Length: 225
Ligand SMILES: [Fe+2]
Image (tube, rainbow, N blue to C red):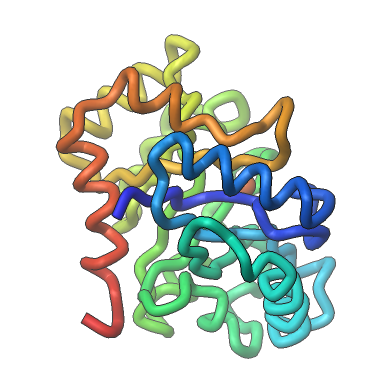
């Protein structure tokens, strides 16, 4: 199933869709672009949340509001890497539902070793496979050796559909694909304007087999297979 691994389509839960109408329009556009399954990944910031269970309750409520979605929606979260994340109760429940996959976002500040340790602890203690959210977006913040450390993580690397616009992003993409890093694609759509559903951009540039490989990651890490 053609899959969008990163989206903010749930209404009024984060800085994504601001209401049900916007959510439904975003879903319609994704459908027109050929997407069949969308992973809803609202931001989870440990320092802003009361608890994982409270976040999940809000996520379920948002999902219920768009139950007439034209696409299959699978719940997940975009989990910001923060100190102590691995020790938080129920952290494993932020995995993409029905899979061992968890989408993790690095901070947009300087890189530090503890971030790798948190990822290691979150994933190994709970038998999860990390997906590093939009790996190319850290290039302006992290130096070359930091990026190399990130690429050494036993992870899947998520790329946003617009990633091929600038030279450094293109170079990273080529490196990932040439060296057979596992890659999945996502729109990271937030709205209908500045960050809209954009699979039209990707389909022009990427070969069909890479899209198939991206789609298959969901099945490969499915718990119910
Ligand atoms: Fe995102």
